[in-house]
Structure formats: C-alpha cells, structure tokens
Length: 112
Length: 110
Image (cartoon, rainbow over all chains, first blue to last red; front, side):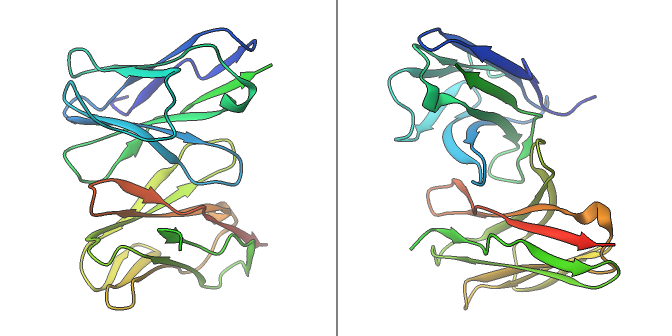
C-alpha cells in the first residue's frame, strides 16, 4: 500500500499525559499536513511542512502541540499535557506542492 | 462570513436519482476546489478536483464551478446507497491553505 499511513489508529490516554502520533506520507509528496477533526466539523488545519521545513502553524495549535518532519519524510505530532478538549481525530495528508491532498486513516485520540 | 459554506443536511435522495451538493466560498482569488467523501468514522477520500469554470465529469460524478458567483457544486447521478456519506467541499485559499467546509450529510433512500 503506497498511501498515507498513520500510527496509532486509536489512542486512549489520561488527562495530563503526553502522546505522539506518526504519519508516513506518499513517498513522492513533498508536502505534509496535519488536521484535527471533531464530530460534525470539517478538518481544521493545524500545520504543514514542505520537505523538512514547517511553513505554517494555525493559531489553534497551542504551545502544547509540536510537530516535526526531521528528514522531510515521516512526521510526528506531539501533544503534551493532554486535555479533554484535545479528544478528536487527528488527520495527516500529503500532496505534491499545492495539488490534491490525500489523507491517511487518522488517529482517534480519546482523553479521559 | 465563513470561508467555505455548505448546508449540513441531511440531504435525502431516492436511489437512482441525482444528488446535488452545493458549496460557496468567500476568497475571490481561490483557484483550486476539491470534493471529498467521508464515511462515518473514516478519513476523507478525494473524489473530484476542479480548477476552471464549467463542468468536469468523472463517472457518475460531475463537479461544477462558477468563479464569478463563488460557487462550486457536485452532482451524483444514479445515486446508490453506497453514496451515503458526508461530502466535504474544500478550497485552496490565497494563503496556499486548503479550507474545508463542515460537510453535507447525504442519505440515499433505497
């Protein structure tokens, strides 16, 4: 399968714990995006990378969130000191430049 | 005004009929438009992209774009129960960022 992959698919954590998600994009895609989606809403942009450079971060992304794409391939999204409001589906997408974005299966986070 | 607006639905359409999904956007300089299908509990799946005014057909799907009216639509012909899903309209804005609408829930009645 050469699509976008994400790991883990589900994560249950207690409030205050740190969590880290991984995304592996389609291999020839230079852009990688992170979104958050809650029930009844469309995906909300969090941040994106072009190769290894993080080009933009949403104001939604508090200081507790950090993302990396160290070698321009896979990316990680870390949430520190999780809160119940962080419960959502975290989606990763990749694209070649500004063209069509293809999504991974998502990581569903539940903070208890 | 929200950047990308869609009617949340649900839109109920009899099997075999044409489903028409609509979307308006606020950024007049937007050039790229996308429709995604999302089944419950799954991630969005790209079904159509359109960049020029007019119609673009792909199988049972037709995307229509009118930049003057800032309006994009998706028609699904011969609707099937498997088309029941949420359809997300997405627009590439002037900041080179794709903005999604909240989606329209489509229900195909057998």
